[in-house]
Length: 463
Length: 99
Ligand SMILES: Cc1cc2nc3c(=O)[nH]c(=O)nc-3n(C[C@H](O)[C@H](O)[C@H](O)COP(=O)(O)OP(=O)(O)OC[C@H]3O[C@@H](n4cnc5c(N)ncnc54)[C@H](O)[C@@H]3O)c2cc1C
Ligand code: FES
Image (tube, rainbow over all chains, first blue to last red; front, side):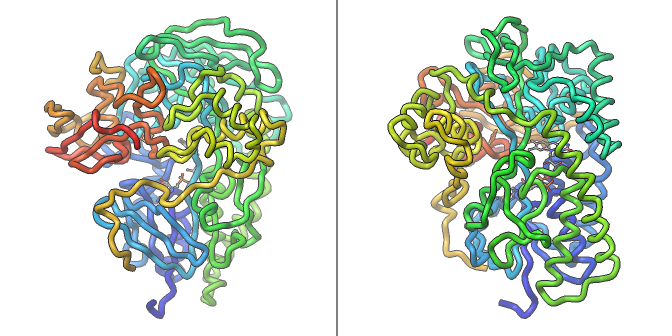
Protein backbone atom coordinates (compact mmCIF):
# COMPACT_ATOMS: atom_id res chain seq x y z
CA UNK A 1 0.00 0.00 0.00
CA UNK A 2 1.26 3.48 -0.80
CA UNK A 3 2.29 5.84 1.99
CA UNK A 4 -0.69 8.03 1.35
CA UNK A 5 -3.77 6.70 3.16
CA UNK A 6 -6.55 5.54 0.92
CA UNK A 7 -10.05 6.81 1.54
CA UNK A 8 -12.84 5.03 -0.33
CA UNK A 9 -16.40 6.34 -0.44
CA UNK A 10 -19.23 4.16 -1.73
CA UNK A 11 -22.02 6.31 -3.19
CA UNK A 12 -21.82 9.58 -5.12
CA UNK A 13 -25.10 11.00 -3.86
CA UNK A 14 -25.17 14.24 -1.86
CA UNK A 15 -23.66 12.49 1.19
CA UNK A 16 -20.74 10.73 -0.49
CA UNK A 17 -19.98 13.52 -2.97
CA UNK A 18 -19.96 16.16 -0.24
CA UNK A 19 -17.60 14.05 1.87
CA UNK A 20 -15.19 13.72 -1.07
CA UNK A 21 -15.31 17.47 -1.77
CA UNK A 22 -14.65 18.38 1.87
CA UNK A 23 -11.71 15.93 2.00
CA UNK A 24 -10.31 17.30 -1.25
CA UNK A 25 -10.44 20.83 0.15
CA UNK A 26 -8.40 19.55 3.12
CA UNK A 27 -5.83 17.96 0.81
CA UNK A 28 -6.94 14.33 1.13
CA UNK A 29 -7.55 12.20 -1.94
CA UNK A 30 -10.45 9.81 -2.22
CA UNK A 31 -11.94 7.24 -4.53
CA UNK A 32 -15.72 7.53 -4.98
CA UNK A 33 -17.46 4.43 -6.31
CA UNK A 34 -21.01 4.68 -7.62
CA UNK A 35 -23.00 2.35 -9.83
CA UNK A 36 -24.71 5.14 -11.75
CA UNK A 37 -23.31 6.64 -14.94
CA UNK A 38 -23.27 10.10 -13.30
CA UNK A 39 -22.92 11.47 -9.80
CA UNK A 40 -25.87 12.87 -7.83
CA UNK A 41 -27.55 9.87 -6.25
CA UNK A 42 -31.33 9.65 -6.09
CA UNK A 43 -32.36 13.24 -5.67
CA UNK A 44 -29.98 14.72 -8.25
CA UNK A 45 -30.35 11.87 -10.72
CA UNK A 46 -30.06 12.83 -14.39
CA UNK A 47 -29.75 10.99 -17.66
CA UNK A 48 -26.55 10.82 -19.68
CA UNK A 49 -27.60 14.02 -21.43
CA UNK A 50 -28.87 16.98 -19.35
CA UNK A 51 -30.54 18.58 -22.34
CA UNK A 52 -33.18 16.01 -23.23
CA UNK A 53 -35.32 15.75 -20.12
CA UNK A 54 -38.72 17.32 -19.45
CA UNK A 55 -37.71 17.81 -15.80
CA UNK A 56 -34.92 20.36 -15.52
CA UNK A 57 -31.92 18.98 -13.59
CA UNK A 58 -31.81 20.24 -9.99
CA UNK A 59 -29.30 23.14 -9.98
CA UNK A 60 -27.78 21.83 -6.74
CA UNK A 61 -27.00 18.57 -8.55
CA UNK A 62 -25.54 20.40 -11.53
CA UNK A 63 -23.27 22.33 -9.12
CA UNK A 64 -22.29 19.16 -7.27
CA UNK A 65 -21.22 17.42 -10.50
CA UNK A 66 -19.30 20.49 -11.64
CA UNK A 67 -17.40 20.68 -8.34
CA UNK A 68 -16.56 16.97 -8.49
CA UNK A 69 -15.20 17.46 -12.00
CA UNK A 70 -13.15 20.48 -10.86
CA UNK A 71 -11.53 18.38 -8.15
CA UNK A 72 -10.75 15.43 -10.43
CA UNK A 73 -7.13 15.94 -9.28
CA UNK A 74 -8.13 14.78 -5.78
CA UNK A 75 -11.32 12.78 -6.35
CA UNK A 76 -11.31 9.67 -8.49
CA UNK A 77 -14.95 9.09 -9.39
CA UNK A 78 -15.46 5.53 -10.62
CA UNK A 79 -18.82 5.87 -12.32
CA UNK A 80 -20.75 2.74 -13.20
CA UNK A 81 -18.74 0.63 -10.74
CA UNK A 82 -20.69 -1.43 -8.23
CA UNK A 83 -19.41 -2.63 -4.85
CA UNK A 84 -20.51 -6.26 -4.56
CA UNK A 85 -18.60 -7.30 -1.45
CA UNK A 86 -16.97 -5.76 1.64
CA UNK A 87 -15.14 -7.09 4.70
CA UNK A 88 -14.46 -5.74 8.22
CA UNK A 89 -10.83 -5.35 7.09
CA UNK A 90 -12.19 -2.74 4.66
CA UNK A 91 -11.51 -4.77 1.56
CA UNK A 92 -14.04 -4.08 -1.18
CA UNK A 93 -14.93 -6.20 -4.17
CA UNK A 94 -15.87 -3.94 -7.05
CA UNK A 95 -17.54 -4.84 -10.35
CA UNK A 96 -16.61 -2.37 -13.10
CA UNK A 97 -19.12 -1.74 -15.93
CA UNK A 98 -17.13 -4.20 -18.01
CA UNK A 99 -14.10 -6.29 -17.29
CA UNK A 100 -13.15 -8.41 -14.31
CA UNK A 101 -13.97 -7.60 -10.68
CA UNK A 102 -11.21 -5.97 -8.66
CA UNK A 103 -10.54 -5.73 -4.96
CA UNK A 104 -9.68 -2.49 -3.26
CA UNK A 105 -8.31 -1.92 0.26
CA UNK A 106 -9.24 1.21 2.17
CA UNK A 107 -7.71 2.82 5.25
CA UNK A 108 -10.96 4.67 5.79
CA UNK A 109 -14.20 3.48 4.25
CA UNK A 110 -17.35 5.59 3.98
CA UNK A 111 -20.64 3.87 3.19
CA UNK A 112 -23.01 6.39 1.59
CA UNK A 113 -25.30 4.06 -0.33
CA UNK A 114 -28.59 5.91 0.11
CA UNK A 115 -32.11 4.62 0.53
CA UNK A 116 -34.33 2.05 -1.13
CA UNK A 117 -38.06 2.30 -1.57
CA UNK A 118 -40.38 0.21 0.60
CA UNK A 119 -42.77 -1.94 -1.44
CA UNK A 120 -46.06 -3.38 -0.27
CA UNK A 121 -47.39 -6.42 -2.13
CA UNK A 122 -51.08 -6.32 -3.08
CA UNK A 123 -53.04 -8.55 -5.46
CA UNK A 124 -52.02 -7.64 -9.00
CA UNK A 125 -48.81 -5.75 -8.13
CA UNK A 126 -46.78 -8.00 -10.46
CA UNK A 127 -48.80 -6.95 -13.55
CA UNK A 128 -47.03 -5.10 -16.35
CA UNK A 129 -47.68 -1.37 -15.82
CA UNK A 130 -47.04 -1.39 -12.06
CA UNK A 131 -43.88 0.43 -10.99
CA UNK A 132 -42.25 1.72 -7.88
CA UNK A 133 -42.98 5.39 -7.30
CA UNK A 134 -39.25 6.05 -7.50
CA UNK A 135 -39.13 3.99 -10.69
CA UNK A 136 -41.68 6.19 -12.45
CA UNK A 137 -39.71 9.25 -11.32
CA UNK A 138 -36.47 7.74 -12.61
CA UNK A 139 -38.03 7.03 -16.03
CA UNK A 140 -38.92 10.71 -16.13
CA UNK A 141 -35.68 12.20 -14.77
CA UNK A 142 -33.23 9.84 -16.44
CA UNK A 143 -34.90 8.85 -19.69
CA UNK A 144 -37.58 11.51 -20.34
CA UNK A 145 -40.42 8.96 -20.38
CA UNK A 146 -43.91 10.24 -19.52
CA UNK A 147 -46.83 7.85 -18.90
CA UNK A 148 -49.19 7.94 -21.88
CA UNK A 149 -52.07 6.25 -20.06
CA UNK A 150 -54.04 7.35 -17.00
CA UNK A 151 -51.89 6.97 -13.88
CA UNK A 152 -52.80 6.20 -10.29
CA UNK A 153 -50.13 6.80 -7.64
CA UNK A 154 -50.39 5.20 -4.23
CA UNK A 155 -48.41 4.86 -1.04
CA UNK A 156 -47.35 7.46 1.45
CA UNK A 157 -44.82 10.15 2.29
CA UNK A 158 -43.41 13.22 0.57
CA UNK A 159 -42.21 11.33 -2.52
CA UNK A 160 -45.85 10.50 -3.35
CA UNK A 161 -46.73 14.18 -3.73
CA UNK A 162 -43.45 15.10 -5.40
CA UNK A 163 -43.87 12.44 -8.10
CA UNK A 164 -47.57 13.31 -8.48
CA UNK A 165 -46.71 16.97 -9.05
CA UNK A 166 -44.00 16.01 -11.56
CA UNK A 167 -46.52 13.82 -13.43
CA UNK A 168 -49.01 16.67 -13.68
CA UNK A 169 -46.31 19.09 -14.74
CA UNK A 170 -45.07 16.87 -17.56
CA UNK A 171 -48.58 16.34 -18.90
CA UNK A 172 -49.35 12.84 -17.64
CA UNK A 173 -53.03 12.15 -16.92
CA UNK A 174 -53.10 11.57 -13.19
CA UNK A 175 -56.38 9.84 -12.32
CA UNK A 176 -55.88 9.74 -8.55
CA UNK A 177 -53.44 9.90 -5.66
CA UNK A 178 -54.07 7.38 -2.88
CA UNK A 179 -52.38 8.15 0.44
CA UNK A 180 -52.37 5.74 3.37
CA UNK A 181 -51.85 8.66 5.74
CA UNK A 182 -54.36 11.27 6.84
CA UNK A 183 -53.74 15.00 6.52
CA UNK A 184 -50.81 16.07 8.68
CA UNK A 185 -52.13 17.13 12.10
CA UNK A 186 -51.38 20.62 13.45
CA UNK A 187 -48.63 19.05 15.56
CA UNK A 188 -47.07 17.45 12.48
CA UNK A 189 -47.32 20.75 10.58
CA UNK A 190 -45.48 22.48 13.41
CA UNK A 191 -42.70 19.90 13.13
CA UNK A 192 -42.61 20.19 9.33
CA UNK A 193 -42.16 23.95 9.76
CA UNK A 194 -38.66 23.19 11.11
CA UNK A 195 -37.66 23.03 7.43
CA UNK A 196 -39.77 25.87 5.97
CA UNK A 197 -38.48 25.45 2.42
CA UNK A 198 -39.43 21.79 2.26
CA UNK A 199 -42.84 22.51 3.81
CA UNK A 200 -43.44 25.21 1.18
CA UNK A 201 -42.43 22.78 -1.55
CA UNK A 202 -44.89 20.21 -0.24
CA UNK A 203 -47.71 22.74 -0.15
CA UNK A 204 -46.76 23.74 -3.70
CA UNK A 205 -47.16 20.13 -4.84
CA UNK A 206 -50.57 19.92 -3.16
CA UNK A 207 -51.73 23.12 -4.84
CA UNK A 208 -50.53 21.86 -8.23
CA UNK A 209 -52.61 18.71 -7.75
CA UNK A 210 -55.62 20.76 -6.70
CA UNK A 211 -55.33 23.05 -9.72
CA UNK A 212 -55.13 20.00 -11.98
CA UNK A 213 -58.24 18.59 -10.30
CA UNK A 214 -56.53 15.38 -9.19
CA UNK A 215 -58.63 13.53 -6.58
CA UNK A 216 -56.65 12.65 -3.44
CA UNK A 217 -57.88 9.70 -1.39
CA UNK A 218 -56.64 9.73 2.20
CA UNK A 219 -56.48 6.95 4.78
CA UNK A 220 -56.81 4.67 1.78
CA UNK A 221 -54.68 2.31 -0.24
CA UNK A 222 -54.60 0.64 -3.61
CA UNK A 223 -55.78 -2.73 -2.29
CA UNK A 224 -55.88 -4.57 -5.61
CA UNK A 225 -54.73 -4.01 -9.18
CA UNK A 226 -56.88 -5.57 -11.90
CA UNK A 227 -56.19 -6.45 -15.51
CA UNK A 228 -55.82 -9.44 -17.77
CA UNK A 229 -52.35 -8.84 -19.16
CA UNK A 230 -51.62 -5.35 -17.97
CA UNK A 231 -53.05 -2.78 -15.59
CA UNK A 232 -56.69 -1.91 -16.32
CA UNK A 233 -57.89 -0.54 -12.98
CA UNK A 234 -57.13 -0.26 -9.29
CA UNK A 235 -59.46 -0.87 -6.36
CA UNK A 236 -59.24 1.40 -3.36
CA UNK A 237 -59.86 0.39 0.25
CA UNK A 238 -60.31 2.64 3.30
CA UNK A 239 -57.71 1.97 5.99
CA UNK A 240 -58.01 1.54 9.75
CA UNK A 241 -55.61 3.43 12.02
CA UNK A 242 -53.12 0.53 11.78
CA UNK A 243 -53.41 0.71 7.96
CA UNK A 244 -55.14 -2.64 7.52
CA UNK A 245 -58.16 -2.49 5.20
CA UNK A 246 -61.37 -1.36 6.89
CA UNK A 247 -63.51 -3.28 4.42
CA UNK A 248 -63.31 -4.84 0.97
CA UNK A 249 -62.16 -2.37 -1.71
CA UNK A 250 -65.02 -0.17 -2.87
CA UNK A 251 -63.99 2.46 -5.40
CA UNK A 252 -62.58 1.32 -8.76
CA UNK A 253 -60.44 3.67 -10.83
CA UNK A 254 -59.58 2.87 -14.45
CA UNK A 255 -55.93 3.43 -15.33
CA UNK A 256 -53.06 1.96 -17.33
CA UNK A 257 -50.08 2.74 -15.11
CA UNK A 258 -49.68 2.44 -11.37
CA UNK A 259 -46.89 3.80 -9.19
CA UNK A 260 -46.59 2.59 -5.61
CA UNK A 261 -44.15 3.44 -2.83
CA UNK A 262 -44.39 3.47 0.95
CA UNK A 263 -41.45 5.62 1.91
CA UNK A 264 -37.79 4.72 2.03
CA UNK A 265 -35.44 2.83 4.30
CA UNK A 266 -31.64 2.79 4.52
CA UNK A 267 -29.81 0.50 2.11
CA UNK A 268 -27.82 -1.36 4.76
CA UNK A 269 -26.59 -4.26 2.65
CA UNK A 270 -22.91 -3.23 2.72
CA UNK A 271 -22.84 -2.33 6.42
CA UNK A 272 -24.63 -5.64 7.00
CA UNK A 273 -21.99 -7.58 5.03
CA UNK A 274 -19.17 -5.81 6.87
CA UNK A 275 -20.77 -6.75 10.18
CA UNK A 276 -21.43 -3.24 11.49
CA UNK A 277 -23.89 -3.07 14.38
CA UNK A 278 -27.42 -1.98 13.46
CA UNK A 279 -30.44 -1.02 15.50
CA UNK A 280 -34.14 -0.90 14.81
CA UNK A 281 -35.50 2.65 14.70
CA UNK A 282 -38.82 3.05 12.87
CA UNK A 283 -38.51 6.86 12.95
CA UNK A 284 -35.46 6.81 10.64
CA UNK A 285 -36.43 3.91 8.41
CA UNK A 286 -36.34 0.65 10.41
CA UNK A 287 -32.94 -1.08 10.46
CA UNK A 288 -30.37 1.70 10.70
CA UNK A 289 -26.61 1.73 11.26
CA UNK A 290 -25.36 2.28 14.80
CA UNK A 291 -22.95 5.23 14.74
CA UNK A 292 -21.10 7.46 17.18
CA UNK A 293 -20.78 11.26 17.13
CA UNK A 294 -18.15 11.02 14.40
CA UNK A 295 -20.48 8.89 12.24
CA UNK A 296 -18.12 5.95 12.78
CA UNK A 297 -19.75 2.50 12.81
CA UNK A 298 -18.86 -0.28 15.25
CA UNK A 299 -16.14 -1.47 12.84
CA UNK A 300 -12.89 0.57 13.06
CA UNK A 301 -12.29 2.81 10.07
CA UNK A 302 -15.78 2.25 8.62
CA UNK A 303 -18.16 5.22 8.55
CA UNK A 304 -21.77 5.41 7.38
CA UNK A 305 -23.50 8.61 6.26
CA UNK A 306 -26.66 9.91 4.61
CA UNK A 307 -29.83 7.97 3.93
CA UNK A 308 -27.80 4.77 3.71
CA UNK A 309 -27.19 4.95 7.46
CA UNK A 310 -30.50 6.38 8.70
CA UNK A 311 -33.14 8.28 6.76
CA UNK A 312 -32.63 12.02 7.15
CA UNK A 313 -33.16 13.52 3.70
CA UNK A 314 -30.90 15.50 1.43
CA UNK A 315 -29.96 18.29 3.89
CA UNK A 316 -28.88 15.68 6.39
CA UNK A 317 -26.96 13.75 3.73
CA UNK A 318 -25.00 16.88 2.78
CA UNK A 319 -24.36 17.72 6.45
CA UNK A 320 -23.12 14.23 7.26
CA UNK A 321 -20.73 14.40 4.29
CA UNK A 322 -19.12 17.44 5.91
CA UNK A 323 -19.04 15.92 9.40
CA UNK A 324 -17.50 12.64 8.25
CA UNK A 325 -14.73 14.47 6.41
CA UNK A 326 -13.67 16.10 9.68
CA UNK A 327 -13.82 12.70 11.45
CA UNK A 328 -11.63 11.06 8.81
CA UNK A 329 -9.04 13.85 8.96
CA UNK A 330 -8.83 13.27 12.71
CA UNK A 331 -8.44 9.53 12.22
CA UNK A 332 -5.67 10.06 9.68
CA UNK A 333 -3.96 12.56 11.98
CA UNK A 334 -4.34 15.31 9.43
CA UNK A 335 -5.00 18.95 10.34
CA UNK A 336 -8.61 20.01 9.86
CA UNK A 337 -8.93 23.33 8.03
CA UNK A 338 -10.67 25.97 10.16
CA UNK A 339 -13.42 26.36 7.55
CA UNK A 340 -14.26 22.68 7.74
CA UNK A 341 -14.35 22.74 11.55
CA UNK A 342 -16.88 25.59 11.38
CA UNK A 343 -18.99 23.89 8.76
CA UNK A 344 -18.99 20.60 10.63
CA UNK A 345 -20.02 22.39 13.82
CA UNK A 346 -22.79 24.20 11.96
CA UNK A 347 -23.94 20.95 10.39
CA UNK A 348 -24.17 19.32 13.82
CA UNK A 349 -26.04 22.29 15.26
CA UNK A 350 -28.73 22.18 12.56
CA UNK A 351 -29.28 18.49 13.34
CA UNK A 352 -32.01 19.34 15.89
CA UNK A 353 -34.14 20.98 13.20
CA UNK A 354 -33.64 18.10 10.80
CA UNK A 355 -34.56 15.61 13.50
CA UNK A 356 -37.75 17.51 14.32
CA UNK A 357 -38.68 17.59 10.64
CA UNK A 358 -37.96 13.90 10.20
CA UNK A 359 -40.01 13.01 13.30
CA UNK A 360 -42.95 14.96 11.89
CA UNK A 361 -42.67 13.23 8.49
CA UNK A 362 -42.63 9.91 10.28
CA UNK A 363 -45.50 10.80 12.60
CA UNK A 364 -47.59 11.85 9.63
CA UNK A 365 -46.70 9.22 7.05
CA UNK A 366 -44.56 6.55 8.72
CA UNK A 367 -45.28 2.98 7.66
CA UNK A 368 -47.79 1.05 9.78
CA UNK A 369 -47.67 -2.71 9.75
CA UNK A 370 -51.35 -3.35 8.93
CA UNK A 371 -50.58 -2.36 5.34
CA UNK A 372 -48.81 -5.69 4.86
CA UNK A 373 -52.10 -7.56 5.33
CA UNK A 374 -53.32 -6.22 1.97
CA UNK A 375 -51.58 -9.14 0.25
CA UNK A 376 -54.01 -12.01 -0.32
CA UNK A 377 -52.91 -15.55 0.50
CA UNK A 378 -52.10 -16.26 -3.15
CA UNK A 379 -50.43 -12.88 -3.79
CA UNK A 380 -46.84 -13.22 -4.95
CA UNK A 381 -44.65 -11.54 -2.34
CA UNK A 382 -41.21 -12.54 -3.65
CA UNK A 383 -41.19 -11.80 -7.36
CA UNK A 384 -37.84 -13.40 -8.10
CA UNK A 385 -38.86 -16.84 -6.86
CA UNK A 386 -42.63 -16.51 -7.31
CA UNK A 387 -43.32 -17.13 -3.59
CA UNK A 388 -46.77 -16.32 -2.20
CA UNK A 389 -47.80 -14.93 1.16
CA UNK A 390 -49.28 -18.35 2.03
CA UNK A 391 -45.94 -20.10 1.38
CA UNK A 392 -44.06 -17.67 3.64
CA UNK A 393 -46.69 -18.02 6.36
CA UNK A 394 -46.55 -21.78 6.27
CA UNK A 395 -42.74 -21.67 6.60
CA UNK A 396 -43.12 -19.32 9.55
CA UNK A 397 -45.82 -21.52 11.08
CA UNK A 398 -43.60 -24.60 10.94
CA UNK A 399 -41.32 -22.98 13.45
CA UNK A 400 -39.04 -20.88 11.28
CA UNK A 401 -39.63 -17.71 13.23
CA UNK A 402 -36.24 -16.35 12.24
CA UNK A 403 -36.55 -14.45 9.00
CA UNK A 404 -33.47 -16.18 7.60
CA UNK A 405 -34.81 -19.67 8.26
CA UNK A 406 -38.28 -18.89 6.96
CA UNK A 407 -36.72 -17.43 3.82
CA UNK A 408 -34.56 -20.49 3.23
CA UNK A 409 -37.55 -22.74 3.70
CA UNK A 410 -39.97 -20.84 1.46
CA UNK A 411 -37.27 -19.46 -0.91
CA UNK A 412 -38.71 -15.96 -0.44
CA UNK A 413 -35.88 -13.49 -0.84
CA UNK A 414 -33.51 -16.13 -2.21
CA UNK A 415 -33.63 -14.94 -5.82
CA UNK A 416 -31.46 -12.53 -7.74
CA UNK A 417 -32.63 -9.44 -5.83
CA UNK A 418 -31.84 -11.11 -2.50
CA UNK A 419 -35.07 -9.87 -0.97
CA UNK A 420 -34.41 -6.18 -1.54
CA UNK A 421 -37.97 -5.73 -2.81
CA UNK A 422 -39.90 -8.29 -0.74
CA UNK A 423 -37.76 -8.12 2.42
CA UNK A 424 -39.92 -5.58 4.24
CA UNK A 425 -43.08 -7.54 3.54
CA UNK A 426 -41.54 -10.96 4.18
CA UNK A 427 -40.19 -9.82 7.56
CA UNK A 428 -43.65 -8.53 8.58
CA UNK A 429 -45.40 -11.68 7.38
CA UNK A 430 -42.95 -13.94 9.23
CA UNK A 431 -43.11 -11.86 12.40
CA UNK A 432 -46.90 -11.70 12.28
CA UNK A 433 -47.31 -15.44 11.66
CA UNK A 434 -44.79 -16.29 14.39
CA UNK A 435 -46.35 -13.78 16.78
CA UNK A 436 -43.12 -11.85 17.35
CA UNK A 437 -42.12 -8.23 16.81
CA UNK A 438 -40.62 -7.49 13.40
CA UNK A 439 -37.25 -6.57 14.93
CA UNK A 440 -37.16 -9.98 16.62
CA UNK A 441 -37.31 -11.66 13.20
CA UNK A 442 -33.83 -10.22 12.58
CA UNK A 443 -32.29 -7.83 10.06
CA UNK A 444 -32.39 -9.18 6.51
CA UNK A 445 -28.80 -9.99 5.49
CA UNK A 446 -27.45 -9.83 1.97
CA UNK A 447 -25.21 -12.55 0.57
CA UNK A 448 -21.98 -12.38 -1.40
CA UNK A 449 -21.72 -11.31 -4.13
CA UNK A 450 -24.40 -8.65 -3.79
CA UNK A 451 -25.03 -8.86 -7.52
CA UNK A 452 -24.49 -11.80 -9.85
CA UNK A 453 -21.20 -11.59 -11.70
CA UNK A 454 -20.64 -13.19 -15.09
CA UNK A 455 -18.13 -16.04 -14.70
CA UNK A 456 -15.95 -14.53 -17.39
CA UNK A 457 -15.62 -11.46 -15.19
CA UNK A 458 -14.34 -13.23 -12.10
CA UNK A 459 -10.62 -12.88 -12.51
CA UNK A 460 -7.67 -12.63 -10.17
CA UNK A 461 -8.56 -9.61 -8.04
CA UNK A 462 -5.98 -6.90 -7.88
CA UNK A 463 -5.81 -3.49 -6.37
CA UNK B 1 -45.63 -8.94 -26.32
CA UNK B 2 -45.50 -5.58 -28.02
CA UNK B 3 -48.55 -3.33 -27.79
CA UNK B 4 -49.22 0.41 -27.91
CA UNK B 5 -46.52 1.86 -25.66
CA UNK B 6 -47.67 2.92 -22.20
CA UNK B 7 -45.13 5.76 -22.23
CA UNK B 8 -44.26 8.54 -24.60
CA UNK B 9 -40.88 10.18 -24.85
CA UNK B 10 -40.69 13.81 -23.83
CA UNK B 11 -37.09 13.99 -24.94
CA UNK B 12 -36.26 17.16 -26.76
CA UNK B 13 -33.49 17.18 -29.39
CA UNK B 14 -33.44 13.40 -29.26
CA UNK B 15 -31.05 11.43 -31.43
CA UNK B 16 -31.58 7.76 -32.19
CA UNK B 17 -29.62 4.52 -32.30
CA UNK B 18 -30.49 1.08 -33.64
CA UNK B 19 -30.38 -1.96 -31.41
CA UNK B 20 -31.50 -5.57 -31.86
CA UNK B 21 -34.07 -7.11 -29.54
CA UNK B 22 -34.60 -10.87 -29.91
CA UNK B 23 -33.38 -10.61 -33.48
CA UNK B 24 -35.65 -7.69 -34.37
CA UNK B 25 -34.17 -4.30 -35.19
CA UNK B 26 -35.43 -1.41 -33.06
CA UNK B 27 -34.76 2.33 -33.28
CA UNK B 28 -34.56 3.88 -29.82
CA UNK B 29 -33.77 7.26 -28.27
CA UNK B 30 -30.05 7.56 -27.63
CA UNK B 31 -29.03 8.48 -24.07
CA UNK B 32 -31.87 6.51 -22.51
CA UNK B 33 -31.53 3.40 -20.42
CA UNK B 34 -32.27 0.13 -22.18
CA UNK B 35 -35.24 -0.57 -19.88
CA UNK B 36 -36.72 2.83 -20.73
CA UNK B 37 -36.08 2.32 -24.44
CA UNK B 38 -37.87 -1.02 -24.42
CA UNK B 39 -40.83 0.39 -22.46
CA UNK B 40 -41.03 3.29 -24.92
CA UNK B 41 -41.17 0.72 -27.73
CA UNK B 42 -44.18 -0.96 -26.13
CA UNK B 43 -42.30 -3.98 -24.80
CA UNK B 44 -43.92 -4.22 -21.41
CA UNK B 45 -42.96 -7.73 -20.31
CA UNK B 46 -39.43 -9.04 -20.43
CA UNK B 47 -40.10 -12.71 -19.70
CA UNK B 48 -42.15 -15.17 -17.65
CA UNK B 49 -41.80 -15.33 -13.88
CA UNK B 50 -41.63 -18.51 -11.83
CA UNK B 51 -45.25 -18.50 -10.60
CA UNK B 52 -48.04 -19.46 -13.02
CA UNK B 53 -49.10 -16.50 -15.12
CA UNK B 54 -46.49 -14.21 -13.57
CA UNK B 55 -44.48 -11.99 -15.89
CA UNK B 56 -41.21 -10.14 -15.36
CA UNK B 57 -40.76 -6.51 -16.31
CA UNK B 58 -39.04 -3.40 -14.93
CA UNK B 59 -40.36 -2.32 -11.53
CA UNK B 60 -37.83 -0.25 -9.57
CA UNK B 61 -35.70 1.20 -12.41
CA UNK B 62 -32.87 1.68 -9.90
CA UNK B 63 -31.05 -1.64 -10.06
CA UNK B 64 -32.72 -3.20 -7.04
CA UNK B 65 -35.40 -5.63 -8.22
CA UNK B 66 -33.76 -7.61 -11.07
CA UNK B 67 -37.14 -7.84 -12.82
CA UNK B 68 -35.71 -6.14 -15.92
CA UNK B 69 -32.86 -8.53 -16.69
CA UNK B 70 -31.84 -9.53 -20.18
CA UNK B 71 -28.87 -11.00 -21.97
CA UNK B 72 -26.92 -8.12 -23.49
CA UNK B 73 -24.21 -8.85 -26.06
CA UNK B 74 -24.03 -12.40 -24.77
CA UNK B 75 -23.77 -11.58 -21.06
CA UNK B 76 -26.73 -12.89 -19.05
CA UNK B 77 -28.55 -11.31 -16.09
CA UNK B 78 -27.83 -7.71 -17.04
CA UNK B 79 -30.16 -5.18 -15.47
CA UNK B 80 -31.48 -3.22 -18.44
CA UNK B 81 -32.32 -0.25 -16.19
CA UNK B 82 -28.61 0.18 -15.39
CA UNK B 83 -27.44 0.11 -18.99
CA UNK B 84 -27.50 3.03 -21.43
CA UNK B 85 -28.34 1.99 -25.01
CA UNK B 86 -25.47 1.71 -27.49
CA UNK B 87 -25.76 1.43 -31.24
CA UNK B 88 -25.68 -2.21 -32.31
CA UNK B 89 -26.48 -3.60 -28.85
CA UNK B 90 -27.82 -7.17 -29.05
CA UNK B 91 -30.57 -7.79 -26.50
CA UNK B 92 -32.16 -11.17 -25.74
CA UNK B 93 -35.23 -11.08 -23.55
CA UNK B 94 -36.44 -14.64 -24.00
CA UNK B 95 -33.21 -16.07 -22.60
CA UNK B 96 -33.37 -13.89 -19.55
CA UNK B 97 -35.02 -16.33 -17.16
CA UNK B 98 -33.56 -16.57 -13.68
CA UNK B 99 -31.67 -19.59 -12.39
C1 LIG C 1 -36.27 6.05 -5.50
C2 LIG C 1 -35.98 7.24 -4.64
C3 LIG C 1 -36.27 8.53 -5.11
C4 LIG C 1 -35.99 9.64 -4.35
N1 LIG C 1 -36.31 10.89 -4.85
C5 LIG C 1 -36.09 11.97 -4.08
C6 LIG C 1 -36.42 13.28 -4.55
O1 LIG C 1 -36.89 13.44 -5.68
N2 LIG C 1 -36.22 14.33 -3.73
C7 LIG C 1 -35.70 14.16 -2.47
O2 LIG C 1 -35.53 15.13 -1.74
N3 LIG C 1 -35.33 12.96 -2.02
C8 LIG C 1 -35.55 11.87 -2.78
N4 LIG C 1 -35.21 10.65 -2.28
C9 LIG C 1 -34.61 10.54 -0.95
C10 LIG C 1 -33.08 10.48 -1.05
O3 LIG C 1 -32.69 9.30 -0.40
C11 LIG C 1 -32.37 11.68 -0.44
O4 LIG C 1 -32.96 12.87 -0.82
C12 LIG C 1 -30.89 11.80 -0.85
O5 LIG C 1 -30.75 11.46 -2.21
C13 LIG C 1 -30.02 10.95 0.02
O6 LIG C 1 -28.67 11.17 -0.35
P1 LIG C 1 -27.54 10.06 -0.11
O7 LIG C 1 -26.28 10.63 -0.62
O8 LIG C 1 -27.61 9.62 1.29
O9 LIG C 1 -28.02 8.81 -0.99
P2 LIG C 1 -28.30 8.68 -2.57
O10 LIG C 1 -28.59 9.98 -3.17
O11 LIG C 1 -29.30 7.60 -2.72
O12 LIG C 1 -26.90 8.17 -3.16
C14 LIG C 1 -26.42 6.86 -2.94
C15 LIG C 1 -25.65 6.40 -4.16
O13 LIG C 1 -24.95 5.20 -3.87
C16 LIG C 1 -25.10 4.31 -4.95
N5 LIG C 1 -24.88 2.94 -4.46
C17 LIG C 1 -25.65 2.24 -3.58
N6 LIG C 1 -25.14 1.02 -3.37
C18 LIG C 1 -24.03 0.93 -4.14
C19 LIG C 1 -23.06 -0.11 -4.36
N7 LIG C 1 -23.14 -1.28 -3.73
N8 LIG C 1 -22.05 0.14 -5.23
C20 LIG C 1 -21.95 1.34 -5.86
N9 LIG C 1 -22.83 2.36 -5.68
C21 LIG C 1 -23.85 2.15 -4.83
C22 LIG C 1 -26.51 4.59 -5.42
O14 LIG C 1 -26.74 4.12 -6.73
C23 LIG C 1 -26.57 6.10 -5.33
O15 LIG C 1 -26.10 6.72 -6.49
C24 LIG C 1 -35.44 9.49 -3.06
C25 LIG C 1 -35.12 8.21 -2.59
C26 LIG C 1 -35.37 7.10 -3.36
C27 LIG C 1 -35.02 5.73 -2.84
S1 FES D 1 -36.11 -2.39 -12.95
FE1 FES D 1 -35.49 -3.10 -10.99
S2 FES D 1 -33.46 -3.75 -11.39
FE2 FES D 1 -34.05 -2.88 -13.24
